[in-house]
Length: 134
Image (cartoon, rainbow, N blue to C red):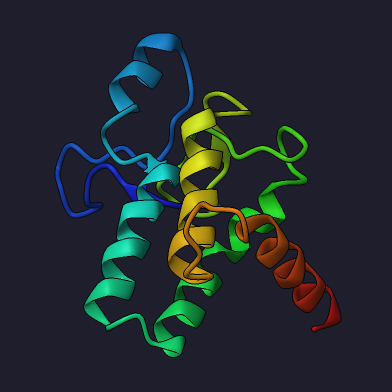
């Protein structure tokens, strides 16, 4: 559900964003997973692996949990953060613009390898049709 803001091996790691406001403030950047960070991670991963079909398929698999999450907190939205520890409960805002927009950008530009332009909408419709038939 994103990249953690701090490694679990760090003594300051807090794997759950819960409790009173002071505790939550202390955990905000101490281990929570941030969905938007998957965008730059996916872009780098695909680039390092020379934009191969296999690298794009792997990246699509990493986005699958977010696809499921679209029906969880805010319909059609991605939450601001998730707990760093399993089961990675959604936390913070139920609808965070930078989360949904960066994951969508990574899907369109990096996984589908499309750039904004006149043919993008038609290509996205074709990709949606292909996904439904699988």
